[in-house]
Each structure stands twice: as C-alpha cells, then as structure tokens.
Image (cartoon, rainbow, N blue to C red; front, side, top):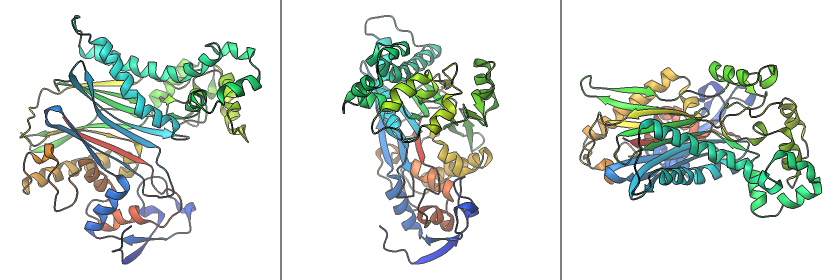
Length: 441
C-alpha cells in the first residue's frame, strides 16, 4: 500500500476511460487519490505485476495483467515462452480473455502451448523430409487449436460412450455419480461451462516468420520503425470476431439458414458476444450436453432460466467457431542483433486495452506515442544492450515495454488521468481486465 498519498480529487463517470462506468453507477462524483510520478509507477507495477521473458537471439517479451479493482479477480491470462522442437527454439506468446469464469482460461493458457508444441514436434521429425512453408505452419497452427478445443467436450463425452446419443443410457443419478468424483471427471466437466478468447503467435527458430492466430476480440499490432521516414508505422494484424463485425454475423447466419435467432442483438443465440472462442461448449454441442451433464454438476444450478433462454435457440450446433483466422508476416526485412535497439514490436492485447483507447484512431496514436517514447529513452542515455539485459531502468519509470504502453493508454504523463484509474473509490471493476504482451521481433 502507498503511504505517500496526500491529495484527493473528484471524478465523474465520463472521466474514466473505457465502457464500464456510466452515470447509473452513482453516486457521482467519486473520490480518487492524486499520485506523483514515482507513486504512479509503483502502483502500476504492484497492480499489473509486469514480467519479462528472454529468448534466444537477444529477443524479449514484456507482459502484464491489469485490473485496479482489488475486489475483482481478473479473467485475463497471458503466456510467453519458448517451445523446444528437436533442439530448435520457437517463440510462443498469447493473451486470453476468459468469460463467465476463469476455469477454462486458466486451462487454455497452460495447456495450449503444450498442444502446439506437440503438433510442431510431430511435424518436424529428425531424419525425415521437412516441409515448412508458411501455409504448412498456418494449417498446423489451425489444426492444433481446433484439436485442443475439440478435446474439451470429447473428454467429457468419453465418460458416456463417446457420443451425445449415449446419454440416453444414463440416468441423472448415474451422470451425477460419474462427473462429481471430486477428481479428474469433475475438472473435465467444469471446463465445458466457461470460455475464453485466444490471440496467440508463433515465431520460427530463424526469426524470419510470424504467425498470429485469432479467436475472439483481442488485438495484434505490428509496430515498425521506418528509417527513411524517421517514424513508426502501426499495422493492425487482426479483426475483431464479435457482434461488431458484420462479416462474422453473416457467417453464422449462413451456417444456420432458417434460424433467425442464431444471432440476436448481435450476440450468438442472444447470449455470447465473441463469435469464435475456445470452450463455451453449450454453444457447440446439442442442448442435451448442457441439460444432462452440466446441469448435474454439483453444487448444482439454482436457476437454469438464463441458460434455457439461449439453449432453446440451439438447433444445429456449433454456433461458436474454434477455427482461428491466421495472419502471416515475413520478418527478414529488418536486421536484429544483440547490440541493436529494437525497431519492430508485436503487441498482443486483450480487448480491455482497446476499451481504454476508445477507438482504433486513438489506439494508433497511443501506440505511436509509446514507440516514440521508447526511442527517446534510448537517445536519452540507455545503452543498446539494455533491451536484452533488462538492466536499464529509466529515470522516468519502468523499462517494461508493456507497462509503459499501459500507462500511455491510461493517460501518459497526465497524473490526474492515470490516478483516477488507479485509485477510484468504487467497489466493482471500473475498467475491463487488460492483458498486454510486447515482444521484440
């Protein structure tokens, strides 16, 4: 806890970035504490717990998971690690935005890198001819994600003969006895109740290729320094796969002709905002899966009415897709070495970051200001090897790239704007969970 806070001010709903606060969350105004610059950095670090991972070749990734409300447990996760494939190091990074609960997002963030590693290991067997075109890796990336998601439901159906049709052979008492074992069966069934978006990337061992796989509404951004123009370019690599995307709505309607309620109020079956996710099995399996299996999980459902509102619309599942959109970029146009200041970054962020930025135009401006700030840091006396050693600490705050980006989105050098988000006197979350990874390429 900070002990140096001495000044207070008042904030209105419109002062808080994002879409969580409105006038109905009163009473407004609410108090917040004004922090000095050093206090801001310490509070940000305490709340976001920034981390750094170092990879072969002098590359690194900075990560964080931010939720300032102490009473709210974040449902975002991130992962940043190397995959050792027959002695060669691939870089895997990802952010995940869980919904309804954190059980599935916790499982996905831990196990998805393992599954992708297994697919890569199987594809590159020592002594066998190697196929490594961009299309081949894109297909492998897709298949690994789809197989991972399919196993979530199949692991449960395997307890009942392997198919939804065999559930008729079991009474509710039988099902309760099997799935409520206080062990692996119970954990498998619980995974089916929740879901998560996923935005994951792969970089090959030679560091010449980047693949980004998108499920949901997180954002991937490529930031590159143009030496000729002496400026930074900002390229969005992904599109949101939610109700704000008319193409996604059209896709689901085309897959379910004659079902006007497959999308209601721009939500899948009138209930779920993302149109592509991992988990969310009630939207991917016959309603009997939910009614016979999930309803029998203990401690049980006191009110199934919210589930029935969308299950009655579930006629021809699946409605939620686990097939990611893959974006590929070559990375050999820029040279990177241990002694060079990075000139290219990949930003992976959950939708909480976009919410803080308000819209794509402002988000691009925020990212560009952040990138220029990193350039100024180097010009201000940071040694080139500080990017790979992690030794440099700026006199202006943190050397963690993700934490600096978060602060820029919260208001940058405006201590009042940042302080409002960090210290608002409110019992429930006033901004969305925000996970960010920034990696050098």
